[in-house]
Image 1: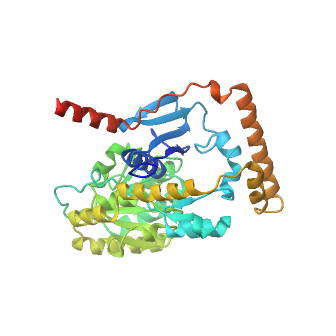
Image 2: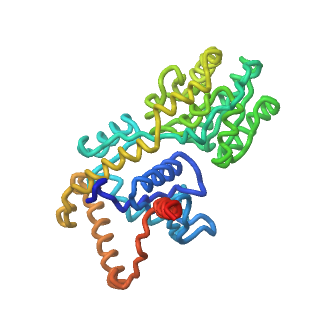
Image 3: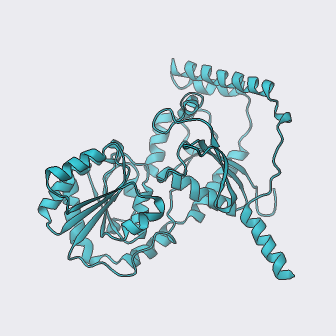
Length: 386
């Protein structure tokens, strides 16, 4: 404990990280950067991506360990699916964080975890990166932007039905679709079937650094997800001044105020009605004002401070041994509880075997040099003193 509070050593474990970029990847990256600024040590652990393996360092000295495992299923590695299987029950955790109240409610109901252990900390957006176009677009031609992975969960099949109908009802509407995935072929077929080559532009995969340039070319952002805990893409679009049309699923209704988003049921007819309503609202939308509101609503620094509080509470929880923890899994079901106990025992024995083969005392530890920005700042101070 120091004058500024406890400093933690934090390991972010995820199968989704850079060079991929999506909601999970953005959350881990920006949160890690802000936790580094607060003085914590943060390491990200993920699986290898192609030739990207071993230890890498990204902005501000964030250490990323690309474990030399290959994805087994949907970017998940086999150890993630098997060894951490019991963790999915949430029976043996000290604290949990959900990104929306809806997600928190679902977590409590499905896992049986005490609500007192679950905290709601939302996502955020880098408003310095996602800014509106300096020149306001006219509404003579309305551009609707879609930036999403083209997969079933993201509602790509819904887009196939919505886009032709919107184009039929509104001759001045054009679509820009950014993203790639197995459902892209369906969108391509739709464009050919309805002869919409001049009204639906398919960009393919869009690097995260270029997402803003795509967003500011449009008036409306369309999100067709079938399930969503939060949706950072909506925040990025709103920060760029776009009015959002989205399916009313998961935590999406909590993301933006009512005058910044039009919600619809995940059905083609309702989505088309929502697009019509958004088009009627466009004259009253000021992108610059919307951007300023987003700066007040969302901040990664605020998210990091709230996350820090949860970490502090987790560290105050009593430490228990394996024998005390195993009974918690038995509450997960008559057969599932026994299965989870068995997996945890196997995990423990595997850990003991690895400890025998390669004792921890024989592993050389790298000195903790702390956050890179802190060292750069101290060097700058020394230079100014000289």
